[in-house]
Image (cartoon, rainbow, N blue to C red; front, side):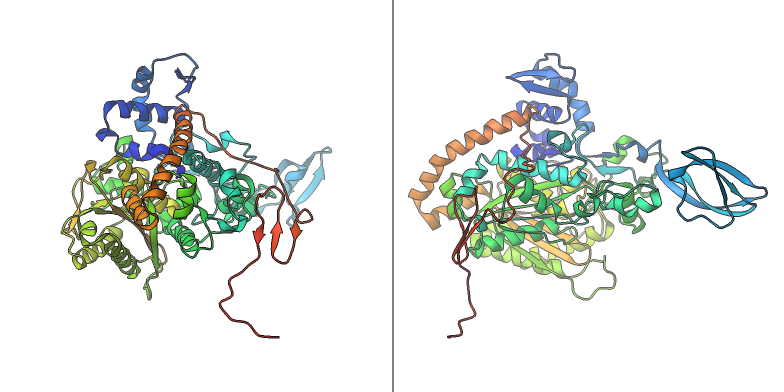
Length: 625
Protein backbone atom coordinates (compact mmCIF):
# COMPACT_ATOMS: atom_id res chain seq x y z
CA UNK A 1 0.00 0.00 0.00
CA UNK A 2 1.04 3.59 -0.50
CA UNK A 3 -0.36 7.07 -0.51
CA UNK A 4 -0.91 10.18 1.54
CA UNK A 5 -3.75 11.85 3.42
CA UNK A 6 -4.17 14.38 6.21
CA UNK A 7 -2.50 11.99 8.67
CA UNK A 8 0.65 11.54 6.58
CA UNK A 9 2.22 8.93 4.35
CA UNK A 10 0.46 5.57 4.00
CA UNK A 11 3.52 3.33 3.71
CA UNK A 12 5.01 2.02 6.90
CA UNK A 13 1.63 2.76 8.56
CA UNK A 14 2.74 6.35 9.17
CA UNK A 15 -0.75 7.79 8.72
CA UNK A 16 -2.28 5.07 10.87
CA UNK A 17 0.23 5.68 13.66
CA UNK A 18 -0.67 9.38 13.61
CA UNK A 19 -4.25 8.42 14.49
CA UNK A 20 -3.15 6.32 17.50
CA UNK A 21 -0.10 8.35 18.53
CA UNK A 22 -1.06 8.58 22.20
CA UNK A 23 -1.18 4.77 22.47
CA UNK A 24 2.33 4.28 21.04
CA UNK A 25 5.46 3.77 23.15
CA UNK A 26 7.62 6.88 23.51
CA UNK A 27 10.26 5.63 21.07
CA UNK A 28 7.62 4.98 18.38
CA UNK A 29 6.08 8.40 18.98
CA UNK A 30 9.48 10.00 18.42
CA UNK A 31 10.04 8.03 15.22
CA UNK A 32 6.59 9.05 13.97
CA UNK A 33 7.15 12.73 14.77
CA UNK A 34 10.48 12.67 12.95
CA UNK A 35 8.96 11.02 9.89
CA UNK A 36 6.15 13.57 9.75
CA UNK A 37 8.58 16.43 10.35
CA UNK A 38 10.57 15.22 7.33
CA UNK A 39 7.39 14.99 5.24
CA UNK A 40 6.48 18.55 6.22
CA UNK A 41 9.92 20.00 5.49
CA UNK A 42 10.71 20.67 9.14
CA UNK A 43 13.83 18.51 9.11
CA UNK A 44 15.61 15.75 7.22
CA UNK A 45 17.93 12.83 7.80
CA UNK A 46 21.13 12.32 5.80
CA UNK A 47 23.50 9.42 6.41
CA UNK A 48 21.95 8.75 9.79
CA UNK A 49 22.22 12.36 11.05
CA UNK A 50 19.27 14.70 11.49
CA UNK A 51 19.17 18.35 10.37
CA UNK A 52 16.58 21.03 11.03
CA UNK A 53 14.80 23.01 8.31
CA UNK A 54 17.73 25.45 8.09
CA UNK A 55 20.18 22.60 7.53
CA UNK A 56 21.76 22.74 10.98
CA UNK A 57 22.69 19.44 12.71
CA UNK A 58 20.32 18.54 15.52
CA UNK A 59 19.77 15.61 17.84
CA UNK A 60 16.82 13.44 16.76
CA UNK A 61 15.08 13.66 20.12
CA UNK A 62 15.52 17.45 20.18
CA UNK A 63 14.07 17.80 16.67
CA UNK A 64 11.08 15.64 17.59
CA UNK A 65 10.50 17.73 20.71
CA UNK A 66 10.84 21.02 18.82
CA UNK A 67 8.48 19.92 16.03
CA UNK A 68 5.88 18.08 18.08
CA UNK A 69 3.38 20.92 18.38
CA UNK A 70 3.81 21.97 14.74
CA UNK A 71 3.33 18.40 13.52
CA UNK A 72 0.28 17.71 15.66
CA UNK A 73 -1.40 21.03 14.84
CA UNK A 74 -0.75 20.85 11.08
CA UNK A 75 -1.85 17.31 10.31
CA UNK A 76 -5.36 15.80 10.35
CA UNK A 77 -8.47 18.02 10.10
CA UNK A 78 -7.75 21.68 10.78
CA UNK A 79 -8.43 25.23 9.68
CA UNK A 80 -7.96 25.48 5.90
CA UNK A 81 -4.50 26.91 5.31
CA UNK A 82 -5.24 28.52 1.94
CA UNK A 83 -5.32 32.23 2.92
CA UNK A 84 -8.33 32.80 0.66
CA UNK A 85 -10.45 30.87 3.15
CA UNK A 86 -9.49 33.18 5.98
CA UNK A 87 -8.64 36.88 6.04
CA UNK A 88 -8.18 37.33 2.29
CA UNK A 89 -11.63 36.00 1.42
CA UNK A 90 -12.66 33.99 -1.62
CA UNK A 91 -12.27 35.86 -4.93
CA UNK A 92 -15.59 36.41 -6.68
CA UNK A 93 -17.50 38.77 -8.97
CA UNK A 94 -20.84 40.47 -8.42
CA UNK A 95 -23.14 41.47 -11.29
CA UNK A 96 -24.12 45.12 -11.23
CA UNK A 97 -25.81 47.69 -13.42
CA UNK A 98 -24.11 51.09 -13.42
CA UNK A 99 -26.34 54.08 -14.13
CA UNK A 100 -24.11 56.52 -16.02
CA UNK A 101 -25.34 60.13 -15.76
CA UNK A 102 -22.54 61.37 -18.03
CA UNK A 103 -20.14 59.90 -20.53
CA UNK A 104 -17.59 57.46 -19.17
CA UNK A 105 -14.15 57.51 -20.78
CA UNK A 106 -11.39 55.04 -19.98
CA UNK A 107 -8.22 53.65 -21.56
CA UNK A 108 -7.64 49.94 -22.03
CA UNK A 109 -5.00 47.67 -23.52
CA UNK A 110 -5.92 46.56 -27.04
CA UNK A 111 -5.90 42.83 -26.20
CA UNK A 112 -8.24 43.38 -23.23
CA UNK A 113 -11.02 44.95 -25.29
CA UNK A 114 -14.01 42.64 -25.93
CA UNK A 115 -14.22 41.32 -29.49
CA UNK A 116 -17.87 42.36 -29.82
CA UNK A 117 -18.57 45.88 -28.60
CA UNK A 118 -21.93 47.47 -27.83
CA UNK A 119 -22.92 49.62 -30.81
CA UNK A 120 -22.96 52.81 -28.70
CA UNK A 121 -19.31 52.53 -27.62
CA UNK A 122 -16.79 54.79 -29.33
CA UNK A 123 -13.16 53.66 -29.61
CA UNK A 124 -10.10 55.57 -30.71
CA UNK A 125 -6.43 54.51 -30.79
CA UNK A 126 -4.01 56.18 -28.38
CA UNK A 127 -0.97 54.15 -29.44
CA UNK A 128 -0.11 50.68 -30.75
CA UNK A 129 -1.10 48.99 -27.50
CA UNK A 130 -3.68 51.31 -25.93
CA UNK A 131 -7.21 52.33 -26.85
CA UNK A 132 -9.59 54.96 -25.45
CA UNK A 133 -13.22 53.95 -25.00
CA UNK A 134 -16.14 56.34 -24.52
CA UNK A 135 -19.42 54.97 -23.18
CA UNK A 136 -22.52 57.20 -23.45
CA UNK A 137 -24.86 57.85 -20.51
CA UNK A 138 -27.24 55.03 -19.63
CA UNK A 139 -27.13 51.55 -18.08
CA UNK A 140 -23.83 49.65 -18.12
CA UNK A 141 -23.76 45.98 -17.03
CA UNK A 142 -20.51 45.05 -15.29
CA UNK A 143 -18.93 42.43 -13.03
CA UNK A 144 -17.47 44.01 -9.91
CA UNK A 145 -14.62 42.05 -8.29
CA UNK A 146 -15.05 41.28 -4.63
CA UNK A 147 -13.98 38.83 -1.95
CA UNK A 148 -16.48 36.80 0.01
CA UNK A 149 -15.88 35.36 3.46
CA UNK A 150 -15.57 31.58 3.41
CA UNK A 151 -18.49 29.88 5.10
CA UNK A 152 -16.55 26.61 5.53
CA UNK A 153 -13.08 26.82 7.03
CA UNK A 154 -12.23 23.25 8.09
CA UNK A 155 -10.83 20.46 5.91
CA UNK A 156 -8.64 17.40 6.01
CA UNK A 157 -5.57 18.70 4.18
CA UNK A 158 -2.28 17.00 3.41
CA UNK A 159 0.29 17.78 6.13
CA UNK A 160 1.46 21.41 5.94
CA UNK A 161 4.55 21.91 3.85
CA UNK A 162 4.11 18.73 1.81
CA UNK A 163 3.65 19.20 -1.93
CA UNK A 164 3.71 15.96 -4.00
CA UNK A 165 4.50 17.86 -7.22
CA UNK A 166 7.94 18.76 -5.85
CA UNK A 167 9.20 15.20 -6.19
CA UNK A 168 8.92 14.84 -9.98
CA UNK A 169 8.63 17.03 -13.08
CA UNK A 170 4.95 17.81 -12.68
CA UNK A 171 4.55 20.52 -15.38
CA UNK A 172 1.40 22.06 -13.84
CA UNK A 173 -0.44 18.82 -13.22
CA UNK A 174 -3.71 18.97 -11.25
CA UNK A 175 -3.10 18.28 -7.58
CA UNK A 176 -4.97 14.97 -7.65
CA UNK A 177 -2.68 13.62 -10.37
CA UNK A 178 0.47 14.74 -8.53
CA UNK A 179 -0.88 12.93 -5.49
CA UNK A 180 -1.44 9.83 -7.67
CA UNK A 181 2.18 9.81 -8.82
CA UNK A 182 3.41 10.08 -5.24
CA UNK A 183 0.96 7.51 -3.88
CA UNK A 184 1.60 4.85 -6.53
CA UNK A 185 5.36 5.38 -6.22
CA UNK A 186 5.09 5.04 -2.45
CA UNK A 187 3.11 1.83 -2.89
CA UNK A 188 5.66 0.25 -5.25
CA UNK A 189 8.73 1.30 -3.29
CA UNK A 190 7.33 0.18 0.07
CA UNK A 191 6.34 -3.21 -1.36
CA UNK A 192 10.02 -4.12 -1.62
CA UNK A 193 9.32 -5.60 -5.07
CA UNK A 194 11.02 -4.49 -8.28
CA UNK A 195 8.24 -3.60 -10.69
CA UNK A 196 10.25 -4.66 -13.74
CA UNK A 197 10.97 -8.05 -12.16
CA UNK A 198 7.29 -8.56 -11.42
CA UNK A 199 6.25 -7.42 -14.89
CA UNK A 200 8.74 -9.68 -16.63
CA UNK A 201 7.23 -12.76 -14.96
CA UNK A 202 3.84 -12.09 -16.49
CA UNK A 203 2.08 -11.77 -19.78
CA UNK A 204 1.64 -7.97 -20.02
CA UNK A 205 -2.12 -8.54 -20.24
CA UNK A 206 -2.12 -10.23 -16.82
CA UNK A 207 -1.60 -6.80 -15.23
CA UNK A 208 -4.32 -4.19 -14.71
CA UNK A 209 -4.74 -0.72 -13.23
CA UNK A 210 -8.08 0.44 -11.85
CA UNK A 211 -7.80 3.96 -10.49
CA UNK A 212 -9.82 7.14 -10.57
CA UNK A 213 -11.73 9.51 -8.32
CA UNK A 214 -15.27 10.61 -7.70
CA UNK A 215 -15.48 14.03 -9.35
CA UNK A 216 -12.46 14.42 -11.63
CA UNK A 217 -9.77 17.06 -11.31
CA UNK A 218 -11.66 20.26 -10.54
CA UNK A 219 -8.81 22.56 -9.51
CA UNK A 220 -7.52 25.28 -11.83
CA UNK A 221 -5.12 22.94 -13.65
CA UNK A 222 -8.01 20.62 -14.59
CA UNK A 223 -11.68 21.03 -15.36
CA UNK A 224 -12.12 23.68 -12.68
CA UNK A 225 -9.95 26.16 -14.57
CA UNK A 226 -11.42 25.07 -17.89
CA UNK A 227 -15.05 25.59 -16.89
CA UNK A 228 -14.52 29.06 -15.46
CA UNK A 229 -12.02 30.26 -18.08
CA UNK A 230 -14.49 32.44 -20.02
CA UNK A 231 -16.06 33.99 -16.92
CA UNK A 232 -12.71 34.57 -15.21
CA UNK A 233 -11.13 36.07 -18.33
CA UNK A 234 -8.41 33.41 -18.45
CA UNK A 235 -7.48 31.25 -21.41
CA UNK A 236 -8.18 27.55 -21.45
CA UNK A 237 -4.99 25.49 -21.82
CA UNK A 238 -4.44 22.37 -23.90
CA UNK A 239 -4.01 20.27 -20.72
CA UNK A 240 -7.11 21.21 -18.75
CA UNK A 241 -9.56 19.16 -20.79
CA UNK A 242 -7.70 15.81 -20.91
CA UNK A 243 -6.28 16.01 -17.39
CA UNK A 244 -9.71 16.61 -15.86
CA UNK A 245 -11.15 13.18 -16.63
CA UNK A 246 -12.04 10.97 -13.67
CA UNK A 247 -10.05 7.97 -14.94
CA UNK A 248 -6.89 10.06 -15.37
CA UNK A 249 -5.12 8.57 -12.29
CA UNK A 250 -5.19 5.19 -14.07
CA UNK A 251 -4.00 6.77 -17.31
CA UNK A 252 -1.11 8.48 -15.52
CA UNK A 253 -0.02 5.23 -13.88
CA UNK A 254 -0.05 3.34 -17.17
CA UNK A 255 1.79 6.02 -19.12
CA UNK A 256 4.29 7.39 -16.60
CA UNK A 257 4.67 4.99 -13.65
CA UNK A 258 4.14 1.37 -14.72
CA UNK A 259 4.29 1.33 -18.49
CA UNK A 260 1.39 -1.11 -18.39
CA UNK A 261 -0.45 -2.27 -21.53
CA UNK A 262 -2.84 -4.49 -19.55
CA UNK A 263 -6.37 -3.86 -18.35
CA UNK A 264 -7.29 -0.36 -17.26
CA UNK A 265 -10.22 1.77 -16.21
CA UNK A 266 -12.01 3.47 -13.36
CA UNK A 267 -15.45 3.12 -11.84
CA UNK A 268 -16.86 6.32 -10.38
CA UNK A 269 -19.29 5.62 -7.55
CA UNK A 270 -19.28 8.77 -5.41
CA UNK A 271 -17.94 7.97 -1.93
CA UNK A 272 -17.69 4.25 -2.79
CA UNK A 273 -15.32 4.75 -5.74
CA UNK A 274 -12.29 3.14 -4.08
CA UNK A 275 -14.27 -0.01 -3.27
CA UNK A 276 -15.75 -0.12 -6.78
CA UNK A 277 -12.24 -0.17 -8.23
CA UNK A 278 -11.08 -2.66 -5.61
CA UNK A 279 -13.94 -4.93 -6.66
CA UNK A 280 -12.77 -4.81 -10.27
CA UNK A 281 -9.29 -5.90 -9.21
CA UNK A 282 -10.53 -8.67 -6.93
CA UNK A 283 -12.90 -10.06 -9.57
CA UNK A 284 -10.19 -9.94 -12.26
CA UNK A 285 -7.83 -11.96 -10.05
CA UNK A 286 -10.51 -14.41 -8.91
CA UNK A 287 -11.43 -15.10 -12.54
CA UNK A 288 -7.79 -15.73 -13.47
CA UNK A 289 -7.82 -12.93 -16.03
CA UNK A 290 -5.21 -10.85 -14.15
CA UNK A 291 -2.51 -11.74 -11.68
CA UNK A 292 -1.37 -8.29 -10.52
CA UNK A 293 -3.64 -5.26 -10.19
CA UNK A 294 -2.89 -1.76 -8.95
CA UNK A 295 -6.01 -0.24 -7.40
CA UNK A 296 -6.44 3.29 -6.11
CA UNK A 297 -8.09 6.67 -6.04
CA UNK A 298 -6.91 10.25 -5.72
CA UNK A 299 -9.17 13.14 -4.76
CA UNK A 300 -8.21 16.78 -4.22
CA UNK A 301 -11.54 18.56 -3.57
CA UNK A 302 -10.37 21.29 -1.19
CA UNK A 303 -11.26 24.09 -3.61
CA UNK A 304 -13.67 27.03 -3.14
CA UNK A 305 -16.08 25.82 -5.83
CA UNK A 306 -16.38 22.20 -4.67
CA UNK A 307 -16.73 23.24 -1.05
CA UNK A 308 -19.45 25.74 -1.98
CA UNK A 309 -21.30 23.05 -3.95
CA UNK A 310 -21.41 20.67 -0.98
CA UNK A 311 -22.22 23.54 1.39
CA UNK A 312 -25.18 24.56 -0.76
CA UNK A 313 -26.47 20.99 -0.43
CA UNK A 314 -26.36 21.33 3.36
CA UNK A 315 -23.82 18.48 3.49
CA UNK A 316 -20.84 20.24 5.09
CA UNK A 317 -20.09 21.34 8.63
CA UNK A 318 -19.96 25.07 7.93
CA UNK A 319 -18.91 27.69 10.47
CA UNK A 320 -22.42 28.75 11.41
CA UNK A 321 -23.51 25.15 12.03
CA UNK A 322 -20.46 24.43 14.17
CA UNK A 323 -21.10 27.54 16.23
CA UNK A 324 -24.73 26.58 16.74
CA UNK A 325 -23.77 23.01 17.65
CA UNK A 326 -21.57 24.15 20.53
CA UNK A 327 -23.28 27.50 21.31
CA UNK A 328 -20.14 29.45 20.37
CA UNK A 329 -19.71 32.97 19.08
CA UNK A 330 -16.21 32.40 17.70
CA UNK A 331 -14.48 29.30 16.37
CA UNK A 332 -10.85 28.65 17.34
CA UNK A 333 -8.30 26.34 15.72
CA UNK A 334 -9.22 23.70 18.30
CA UNK A 335 -12.87 23.91 17.25
CA UNK A 336 -11.99 23.35 13.60
CA UNK A 337 -9.94 20.28 14.58
CA UNK A 338 -13.12 18.83 16.13
CA UNK A 339 -15.33 19.57 13.12
CA UNK A 340 -15.95 15.92 12.18
CA UNK A 341 -17.93 14.01 14.82
CA UNK A 342 -19.13 10.62 13.56
CA UNK A 343 -22.03 9.13 15.56
CA UNK A 344 -22.09 12.13 17.93
CA UNK A 345 -24.26 15.22 17.74
CA UNK A 346 -23.02 16.61 14.46
CA UNK A 347 -23.92 18.91 11.60
CA UNK A 348 -22.18 17.77 8.41
CA UNK A 349 -19.08 16.19 6.95
CA UNK A 350 -15.62 17.71 6.62
CA UNK A 351 -14.15 17.59 3.14
CA UNK A 352 -10.63 16.23 2.64
CA UNK A 353 -7.96 15.29 0.14
CA UNK A 354 -6.21 11.92 -0.11
CA UNK A 355 -4.65 9.44 -2.50
CA UNK A 356 -4.51 5.73 -1.68
CA UNK A 357 -3.16 2.79 -3.70
CA UNK A 358 -2.86 -0.92 -3.03
CA UNK A 359 -1.13 -3.64 -5.04
CA UNK A 360 -3.16 -6.83 -5.38
CA UNK A 361 -1.46 -10.12 -6.31
CA UNK A 362 -2.95 -13.54 -6.73
CA UNK A 363 -1.88 -15.87 -3.93
CA UNK A 364 0.43 -18.03 -6.07
CA UNK A 365 2.27 -14.99 -7.44
CA UNK A 366 2.59 -13.48 -3.96
CA UNK A 367 4.26 -16.67 -2.72
CA UNK A 368 6.55 -16.91 -5.75
CA UNK A 369 7.71 -13.31 -5.35
CA UNK A 370 8.18 -13.45 -1.58
CA UNK A 371 5.78 -10.52 -1.24
CA UNK A 372 5.06 -8.94 2.13
CA UNK A 373 1.37 -9.71 2.67
CA UNK A 374 -0.41 -6.96 4.60
CA UNK A 375 -3.80 -8.65 4.33
CA UNK A 376 -6.17 -10.12 1.78
CA UNK A 377 -9.47 -9.11 0.18
CA UNK A 378 -11.76 -12.08 -0.47
CA UNK A 379 -14.71 -9.99 -1.64
CA UNK A 380 -16.27 -6.59 -2.23
CA UNK A 381 -20.05 -6.27 -2.46
CA UNK A 382 -21.95 -3.50 -4.26
CA UNK A 383 -25.69 -2.80 -4.26
CA UNK A 384 -27.89 0.15 -5.19
CA UNK A 385 -30.69 1.64 -3.09
CA UNK A 386 -33.61 1.11 -5.42
CA UNK A 387 -36.47 3.64 -5.39
CA UNK A 388 -35.55 6.91 -3.63
CA UNK A 389 -37.20 10.20 -2.77
CA UNK A 390 -33.96 12.13 -3.14
CA UNK A 391 -30.86 11.11 -5.08
CA UNK A 392 -28.67 12.01 -2.07
CA UNK A 393 -30.88 10.36 0.56
CA UNK A 394 -29.87 7.02 2.12
CA UNK A 395 -31.61 3.81 1.06
CA UNK A 396 -31.50 0.04 1.50
CA UNK A 397 -28.52 -1.12 -0.55
CA UNK A 398 -26.06 -1.00 2.35
CA UNK A 399 -28.03 -3.63 4.27
CA UNK A 400 -27.39 -6.02 1.40
CA UNK A 401 -23.69 -5.24 1.01
CA UNK A 402 -22.86 -5.57 4.71
CA UNK A 403 -25.08 -8.63 5.07
CA UNK A 404 -23.22 -10.38 2.24
CA UNK A 405 -19.84 -9.35 3.64
CA UNK A 406 -20.72 -10.73 7.08
CA UNK A 407 -21.93 -13.96 5.50
CA UNK A 408 -18.61 -14.35 3.67
CA UNK A 409 -16.58 -13.90 6.87
CA UNK A 410 -18.86 -16.31 8.73
CA UNK A 411 -18.45 -18.90 5.99
CA UNK A 412 -14.65 -18.48 5.72
CA UNK A 413 -13.64 -17.99 9.36
CA UNK A 414 -16.59 -19.22 11.40
CA UNK A 415 -19.21 -17.60 13.61
CA UNK A 416 -16.86 -16.98 16.53
CA UNK A 417 -14.41 -15.01 14.38
CA UNK A 418 -17.26 -12.89 13.00
CA UNK A 419 -18.72 -12.21 16.44
CA UNK A 420 -15.55 -11.76 18.48
CA UNK A 421 -12.68 -10.86 16.12
CA UNK A 422 -14.11 -8.57 13.44
CA UNK A 423 -14.67 -4.81 13.44
CA UNK A 424 -16.44 -2.19 11.37
CA UNK A 425 -14.69 0.62 9.51
CA UNK A 426 -17.71 2.88 9.23
CA UNK A 427 -18.32 5.33 6.44
CA UNK A 428 -19.01 7.66 9.39
CA UNK A 429 -19.36 10.95 7.56
CA UNK A 430 -20.52 13.06 10.55
CA UNK A 431 -23.89 13.99 9.08
CA UNK A 432 -27.06 13.56 11.16
CA UNK A 433 -28.60 11.25 8.56
CA UNK A 434 -25.53 9.05 8.30
CA UNK A 435 -25.22 8.48 12.03
CA UNK A 436 -28.79 7.15 12.12
CA UNK A 437 -28.95 5.17 8.89
CA UNK A 438 -25.49 3.57 9.00
CA UNK A 439 -25.84 2.61 12.66
CA UNK A 440 -29.19 1.00 11.82
CA UNK A 441 -27.51 -1.08 9.11
CA UNK A 442 -24.87 -2.16 11.62
CA UNK A 443 -27.49 -2.92 14.25
CA UNK A 444 -29.65 -5.15 12.05
CA UNK A 445 -26.70 -7.12 10.68
CA UNK A 446 -25.28 -7.49 14.20
CA UNK A 447 -28.62 -8.83 15.47
CA UNK A 448 -28.88 -11.24 12.55
CA UNK A 449 -25.45 -12.68 13.39
CA UNK A 450 -25.64 -12.68 17.17
CA UNK A 451 -22.99 -9.95 17.56
CA UNK A 452 -23.26 -8.22 20.95
CA UNK A 453 -20.48 -5.59 20.93
CA UNK A 454 -19.24 -4.82 17.41
CA UNK A 455 -16.28 -2.38 17.50
CA UNK A 456 -16.75 0.65 15.25
CA UNK A 457 -13.91 2.74 13.82
CA UNK A 458 -14.62 6.05 12.04
CA UNK A 459 -11.36 7.33 10.61
CA UNK A 460 -12.99 10.42 9.10
CA UNK A 461 -12.84 11.92 12.59
CA UNK A 462 -9.10 12.29 11.90
CA UNK A 463 -8.70 12.74 8.15
CA UNK A 464 -12.10 13.97 6.96
CA UNK A 465 -14.09 12.78 3.96
CA UNK A 466 -11.87 12.42 0.90
CA UNK A 467 -14.81 11.58 -1.37
CA UNK A 468 -13.88 8.70 -3.71
CA UNK A 469 -10.72 7.96 -1.69
CA UNK A 470 -12.59 7.58 1.62
CA UNK A 471 -12.67 3.78 1.59
CA UNK A 472 -8.97 3.82 0.73
CA UNK A 473 -8.36 5.76 3.93
CA UNK A 474 -10.44 3.14 5.76
CA UNK A 475 -8.73 0.11 4.17
CA UNK A 476 -5.20 1.33 4.83
CA UNK A 477 -6.18 2.20 8.40
CA UNK A 478 -7.54 -1.34 8.84
CA UNK A 479 -4.19 -2.74 7.66
CA UNK A 480 -2.56 -0.58 10.31
CA UNK A 481 -4.85 -2.06 12.94
CA UNK A 482 -3.79 -5.56 11.91
CA UNK A 483 -0.12 -4.60 12.12
CA UNK A 484 -0.30 -2.79 15.47
CA UNK A 485 -3.17 -4.56 17.22
CA UNK A 486 -4.94 -1.24 17.84
CA UNK A 487 -8.26 0.23 16.78
CA UNK A 488 -8.28 4.04 16.50
CA UNK A 489 -10.79 5.72 18.74
CA UNK A 490 -13.21 8.47 17.76
CA UNK A 491 -11.73 11.39 19.73
CA UNK A 492 -14.52 13.81 18.78
CA UNK A 493 -17.17 11.47 20.19
CA UNK A 494 -17.99 13.23 23.46
CA UNK A 495 -21.20 11.21 23.65
CA UNK A 496 -23.05 8.91 21.26
CA UNK A 497 -26.05 10.75 19.81
CA UNK A 498 -29.45 9.68 21.14
CA UNK A 499 -30.71 8.61 17.70
CA UNK A 500 -27.77 6.26 16.98
CA UNK A 501 -28.66 2.55 17.09
CA UNK A 502 -25.82 1.76 19.48
CA UNK A 503 -27.10 -1.16 21.54
CA UNK A 504 -24.88 -3.73 19.81
CA UNK A 505 -22.09 -1.38 18.74
CA UNK A 506 -18.93 -0.57 20.65
CA UNK A 507 -17.60 2.99 20.44
CA UNK A 508 -14.50 4.40 22.11
CA UNK A 509 -12.83 7.79 22.20
CA UNK A 510 -9.40 6.26 22.84
CA UNK A 511 -7.39 3.69 20.85
CA UNK A 512 -8.24 0.16 21.94
CA UNK A 513 -6.17 -3.05 21.75
CA UNK A 514 -7.93 -5.55 19.49
CA UNK A 515 -6.77 -8.80 17.87
CA UNK A 516 -8.75 -8.74 14.64
CA UNK A 517 -9.21 -11.44 12.03
CA UNK A 518 -11.34 -9.34 9.69
CA UNK A 519 -12.47 -5.79 9.04
CA UNK A 520 -15.48 -4.53 7.11
CA UNK A 521 -14.81 -1.46 4.97
CA UNK A 522 -18.15 0.28 4.55
CA UNK A 523 -19.18 3.02 2.13
CA UNK A 524 -22.53 4.76 1.64
CA UNK A 525 -22.20 7.09 -1.33
CA UNK A 526 -24.42 9.75 -2.92
CA UNK A 527 -26.94 8.35 -5.37
CA UNK A 528 -27.15 4.95 -3.72
CA UNK A 529 -23.57 3.82 -4.30
CA UNK A 530 -23.20 1.31 -1.46
CA UNK A 531 -20.22 -1.00 -1.05
CA UNK A 532 -18.73 -3.15 1.69
CA UNK A 533 -15.32 -4.75 1.37
CA UNK A 534 -13.89 -7.56 3.49
CA UNK A 535 -10.21 -7.43 4.43
CA UNK A 536 -8.57 -10.28 6.34
CA UNK A 537 -5.57 -9.98 8.64
CA UNK A 538 -2.10 -11.21 7.61
CA UNK A 539 -2.28 -13.99 10.22
CA UNK A 540 -5.60 -15.30 8.87
CA UNK A 541 -4.33 -14.95 5.31
CA UNK A 542 -1.26 -17.03 6.14
CA UNK A 543 -3.48 -19.77 7.60
CA UNK A 544 -5.51 -19.78 4.39
CA UNK A 545 -2.31 -20.00 2.33
CA UNK A 546 -1.12 -22.97 4.40
CA UNK A 547 -4.39 -24.75 3.81
CA UNK A 548 -4.33 -24.08 0.08
CA UNK A 549 -0.63 -24.37 -0.80
CA UNK A 550 0.91 -26.47 1.96
CA UNK A 551 3.72 -25.96 4.47
CA UNK A 552 6.57 -26.32 1.97
CA UNK A 553 5.31 -23.55 -0.32
CA UNK A 554 4.64 -21.20 2.60
CA UNK A 555 8.07 -21.94 4.14
CA UNK A 556 9.75 -21.13 0.81
CA UNK A 557 7.73 -17.89 0.65
CA UNK A 558 8.93 -16.88 4.11
CA UNK A 559 12.55 -17.32 2.99
CA UNK A 560 12.03 -15.23 -0.14
CA UNK A 561 10.16 -12.61 1.90
CA UNK A 562 13.32 -11.77 3.87
CA UNK A 563 14.85 -10.03 0.85
CA UNK A 564 11.59 -8.23 0.13
CA UNK A 565 11.42 -6.98 3.70
CA UNK A 566 14.96 -5.68 3.55
CA UNK A 567 14.21 -3.70 0.39
CA UNK A 568 10.98 -2.36 1.89
CA UNK A 569 12.64 -1.37 5.15
CA UNK A 570 15.43 0.39 3.25
CA UNK A 571 12.86 2.52 1.42
CA UNK A 572 10.87 3.24 4.56
CA UNK A 573 14.02 4.37 6.36
CA UNK A 574 14.76 6.76 3.50
CA UNK A 575 11.16 8.00 3.36
CA UNK A 576 11.04 8.59 7.11
CA UNK A 577 14.10 10.79 6.61
CA UNK A 578 12.38 12.84 3.91
CA UNK A 579 13.73 11.07 0.79
CA UNK A 580 11.07 9.66 -1.52
CA UNK A 581 11.24 7.73 -4.77
CA UNK A 582 8.72 9.36 -7.08
CA UNK A 583 8.56 7.09 -10.10
CA UNK A 584 7.82 9.18 -13.20
CA UNK A 585 8.95 8.00 -16.64
CA UNK A 586 7.80 10.70 -19.03
CA UNK A 587 8.63 9.94 -22.68
CA UNK A 588 10.53 6.73 -21.93
CA UNK A 589 10.06 3.59 -24.04
CA UNK A 590 7.29 5.16 -26.12
CA UNK A 591 5.76 2.73 -28.64
CA UNK A 592 3.22 3.59 -31.32
CA UNK A 593 2.66 0.36 -33.26
CA UNK A 594 5.26 -0.21 -36.02
CA UNK A 595 7.67 -1.65 -33.42
CA UNK A 596 5.37 -4.58 -32.60
CA UNK A 597 5.64 -8.14 -33.92
CA UNK A 598 2.11 -9.42 -34.50
CA UNK A 599 1.19 -13.02 -35.17
CA UNK A 600 -2.11 -14.82 -35.03
CA UNK A 601 -1.31 -16.17 -31.54
CA UNK A 602 0.57 -13.37 -29.78
CA UNK A 603 2.03 -9.87 -29.96
CA UNK A 604 5.67 -9.22 -29.01
CA UNK A 605 6.35 -5.79 -27.52
CA UNK A 606 9.90 -4.39 -27.35
CA UNK A 607 10.95 -3.98 -23.71
CA UNK A 608 8.49 -6.59 -22.41
CA UNK A 609 9.96 -10.01 -21.67
CA UNK A 610 6.86 -12.04 -22.44
CA UNK A 611 4.52 -11.56 -25.39
CA UNK A 612 0.84 -10.79 -25.07
CA UNK A 613 -1.11 -13.97 -25.69
CA UNK A 614 -4.06 -13.56 -28.04
CA UNK A 615 -5.75 -16.70 -26.75
CA UNK A 616 -9.20 -15.73 -25.53
CA UNK A 617 -11.87 -17.55 -23.62
CA UNK A 618 -14.83 -18.51 -25.81
CA UNK A 619 -17.82 -19.71 -23.78
CA UNK A 620 -20.16 -19.36 -26.75
CA UNK A 621 -19.25 -22.45 -28.80
CA UNK A 622 -18.22 -22.64 -32.45
CA UNK A 623 -20.01 -22.63 -35.77
CA UNK A 624 -18.41 -25.29 -37.96
CA UNK A 625 -17.32 -24.31 -41.48
